[in-house]
Length: 55
Image (cartoon, rainbow, N blue to C red; front, top):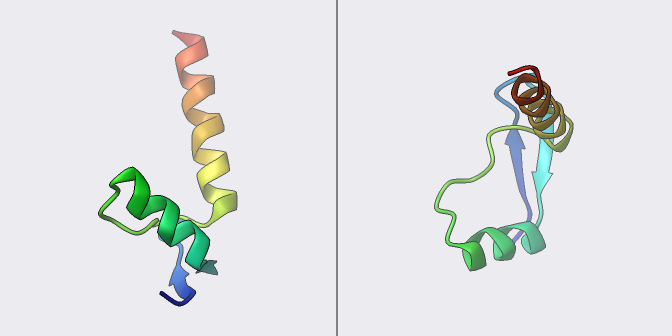
């Protein structure tokens, strides 16, 4: 496995999906590659937490 350069669907920025991350995804049984860069994933998680907190 080699590092892959992917494009974030939210911000359009390129990010690297490292060999280590790929191995982790495979180990966990995830079949899809990430669609968001680490910054957008973090923002999405924070937004979800905020939405759940308001309920």
